[in-house]
Image (cartoon, rainbow, N blue to C red):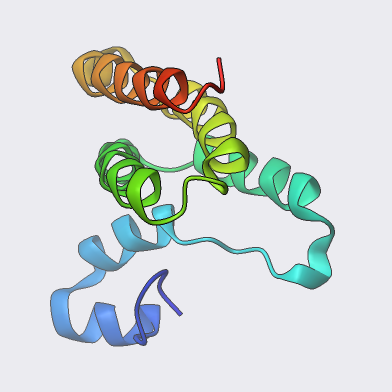
Length: 119
């Protein structure tokens, strides 16, 4: 299943084409709880993200930025776990052509962490 949807990657490919399905696959989590604890799963996801195509990485930056706002207001306690994980993710996502998204996302994460006393 594609992350945050009830659609399979096959469904997405059928509806939107192979290119969109490949982009979505690049940002879809592949791990399950049986793959280990949260830290172990995050390592696997970081490895997968590092291999994603550039367009997937660009979308992942936007996903992270969107989640920052939601979590900061909806679940501030989880931010202590989530935000440091996302800082690691954006390092893996970094490419020169995404420098503005990288800088913006890092600034947003840093500011939210500062407001929550996590830095």
